Image (cartoon, rainbow, N blue to C red; front, side, top):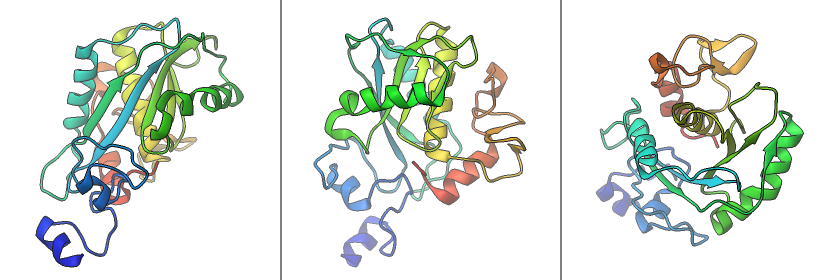
Length: 226
């Protein structure tokens, strides 16, 4: 009730105080109404739940790779209702699947991979968990990652440098929660990317490994869009 919300610091007139797409009640209970566990959830600080999956030919990423992902998201300059900054990335890695999966560079190829694998990868957590899947790319070198804008599913090239993979996981997850960029820093002919700098620039170079102020403001204003 409203009194309980006031005690907790959540907003009684808003179902999702921190804007991360998870209702306050679910985050307090640590479980969605559908029974999906939300370990470590906090209604006053953004949480992002992610499963990393692999096609048969992909190598499972190390615990240090996952720790680096968590660290990068925790450093993002997003102001939370509790006064903290950053996004709490809850990420886990599954065992490689038995299937070989190849992305050929088209929307249809991506849609087919999502249709066949997203629900199988995350099970009953579909619709709550984001899923990044490492697969082979046979697209002439056009992409290192591909995903929904916004949405819950993305793929990353399994045969590129680990740092490129790290950058693309972050890049595609941001696409999943941000959608087209509303600010004037978006590329005129490509509104899902930033033309100046930051994680949503293409390509993401070492000097661009940060969340731009414009995108941070958009997340704070709109919350997670996917």
